[in-house]
Image: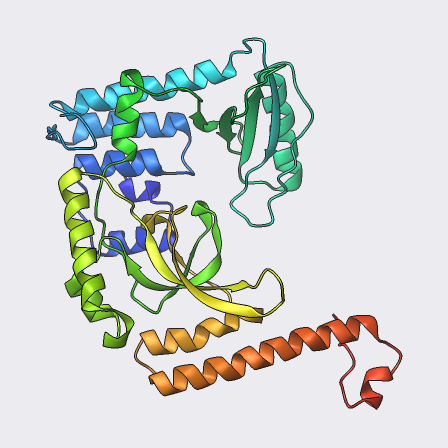
Length: 358
């Protein structure tokens, strides 16, 4: 079985294949569960294949999970729970259903459809629109009529073939669903092809804007020293990172995230700015190399890329960033004037007209 098929990131999938990475049963099962593009039944079949072809093992108790004495039996429980979730979601139970685009695209149209009396009717209408509109994924919502309490309802994601990808059932917690929680929260460290200064994004994790990678939560202080210029970190931060990593390894769980620089706009103006952030909504194994050229305010990231890759000095970083910022602000102001004025007014004032293709 090709475990790499269950790695959503094409970049990481290719890298692991190139390295001939030897997956353990635990790592393989984890990646199968985390995959957002495999159907529920495909994941269950993959776990069955792991049980047949990979050695059994046991996992000791950690702060985040109970002991797992028989990993194969654990996977059988996970399979039964996934199928139970799907069956439960598809039952009407006096509820109604709607669907919406949930494609891995920032342009996905999120408006919900009308209401359907059964899951099957909603699924059929959803699949038809998916094929007509080219959606790669859709979300079906289950609504309880006359519901007064606030909160999210049950949801289920489908692929264009109408196959269930995953289900999220509200209120499913406690001992019965502990295996799925234990699997989802496992702390595992996979090698990746990324380095500080790489321009990345995470489309399957909902991060479509590019950011300049500075660190991954699995990197220790030694790796960070290798990756970043000495001016990009403090000794106190390195000590904190080592402490955090040791805690994740000991507890068996933690935030498997990446950090980096991206751009934003001031809420009260159109002036762009640069900021560093951890990206909690995506996991590091969802990262991809950003394939497009930088445009607009994203161009502010290029001096940062050059500096983190040690291709420029601090002096050049500051000066080039300053000039780019002024240029971007000027372009935004010019666009506004070109929108308001037409008919040769701007050239008479020494400013260019808008491009005809704009």
